[in-house]
Length: 609
Image (cartoon, rainbow, N blue to C red):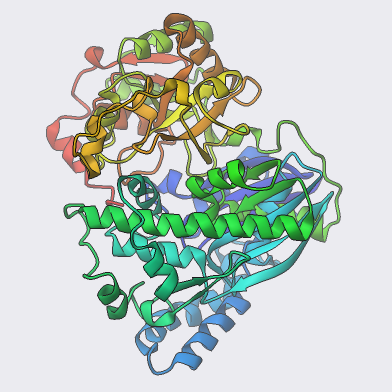
């Protein structure tokens, strides 16, 4: 038996993953345990859980692999500082203490964190991304595209995977970066980098891409292959402490939007403009890689691969027969990729292609079982009251309550790995409701009203509701709502956020203002529980689409335990809660664990994103 522990840490979204004989036994982000969104610290809790899941202690692990090459990363920092001096002095002084005391000696640091004395292996950052995308994919051979902010020197790479081997052929190098360009606009529009990119993507359909030519004419020269050259006079990420400079602010006619301030039409137009540029860049990259490889399939990873608007366009308008994106495409997935690359690349082990893919539906994290005396004890201590139901009873009850307009949260089974809740830690609602989108945003998630929700749809019915080219089991592709389901609307002079007031389809809660939807297809093999819930909902309503959003409030990591789930339930206006096979109704709970003061104190734990 050979075991491999993969680790990502120290930058954002730390995680751990464990393989035994090449099989993924578990993977989880540190944030789910510490309750700190995007936690960058060493993933002690995630590592501990992975070891427990594999039935090992750290001394029994055969190989420990980190997802990046620290010395090459340091080389990039030093070269940047030296070639831009003295402009980068402040950034240099801020970064060096951590590097000189910790990151430069990362092998020793990781060994000390784990309490071992042994060799730590290191894998290139983008090779970790590539491995996370190709090895669990359902393809024997595929083109590979990785795109993110930066890892060592690379900001994007392309190559091929065949059997148990990966070859990366070309790279885009720092400071030219599609990810850092998008993050600069995230910052400029008042959102938090490495967290608010989803907001920028969701805001884009409210605007017009009137600044796109200004971006490509001054800020980012876009080349035929999708690569770009960024004019560094507009950016501060290489030498300063902010993403944008005074020249950037002058070009776009104002300073960055203060966080939490009113969103204006200008912000929406900026979001639409940078999204248009990202879309075009990803399409060009995809077409270039297809010309070079002549392969039918493409796999994707890196933080930019989570921009499901761009990847949806690549799926529907690009040259590939099918694309597959690693569900934990960001840095968290690097832990898994590092372990997989060591197993196949270093140890030369053969690869088994699993159907429908090797990610086990994305359900790789800690479990909330159907029944657990420990969870019973925790919930009773918090004052919870529930009914115990079998699986069939749960399917019927959830479907009926959703059909009656209630919001139902689900926390059961193994937690998802990656940023998307896929049904194990989800909040569900009726996609047919005209008020569900605003209700969930304002009364459940406590977040901005403009943010869209994703539809869950039975895979067999997906083309009945959406113009989709392929399955989307991990909620990583945006497709249009089908013409047959759209509602004709009269132009009434409304613009911006006011566009929300106009229902655009028969499933308005999941239809964005541009008639798009971030689609999750549900099949019985990956997610039998939610599949049967939607089947029951379809029998009741004739509709096989429901709303799915992550089980958390704004700024909170997705819930992990029964205790996390109950606290979130009691702090919001969720109507019903499923924990394992327990069914809890709000009107039967006391307010003992969460009065108004406790609720405010609990919500203040989570930094706004």
